[in-house]
Image (cartoon, helix red, strand yellow):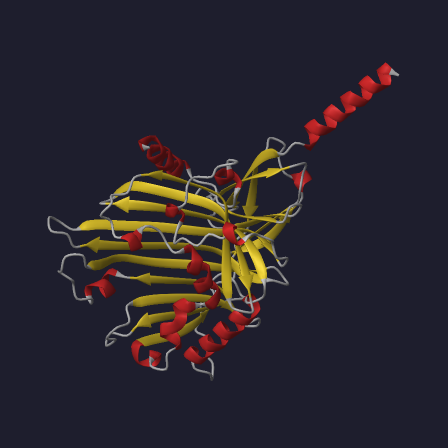
Length: 387
């Protein structure tokens, strides 16, 4: 009897060992150039976790056992890789083949491009505005006078309520490192997490283009996507005679589903030169502005996948101007139509994670959707050391 109990205990121990989660890394590369592919979407089929490759083409995740992996990127053919075909050293390389389409030709349409954009926005809002929740990894780098001075990141949940078209934000974990001077303008201490996702979901960035006067300020062109036959690219740039318009837009969309899949908004140095420089103390002059947002259609659901925003200002001071740069990134790691339960006291109502004390339960930053590059890890470590 004792031998049976001992054997049973050994079996339980082995089962617990085998059931433990292990860390895996995948690197996504171009099969022809052997170069890493950034912003490739990697879905772990077993857990439905969504990851985004970094500049090194790398994603990292925790997994019990094995799982097939789906990889996609706009300029490459989608691929599903069986777990058994990957290497056994927990460091896998997945190669993507470029879509050899090379259309890049002007698309002719009887309908005006601004009217097409209006329909795209309306339909995209309709598809995205269902009640759901998203688990999101968010991170932010802050630079003062070209020196990294602050960093924060967190694992958060957004609950979308379609009835009032608003979000509820709960913070699972977060951390902040570095120091900010007390006289830095408060509105530059991070992006407002309570409305940034709403702006992505409501496509607020397109408001200037949907104005009835937009044709007098912008030039619209539509071309076929150079490497993806399923997508069109709408480019919108300010006219030379434009009085207020300074943003350049590039919108990638699916013309059949009428869904926006990606958009980029940037301000060129030429456009910045058009802005009259401010000289009063406390005023701000823009030095950089960049926004890129990706959306995902998984066959049934449509939602914000990732975003990257960079903004720069020069603040007029008595002695000399202070240069401020903030870089913010989002990546959705999980999507679910089921509501989560919470107490009102759990709701995060502050502007940014800058205002919340550190809450670290796991090394969530290593496995939560967007793996830091070696350079980024060095920056974070240096800011942590300052505390």
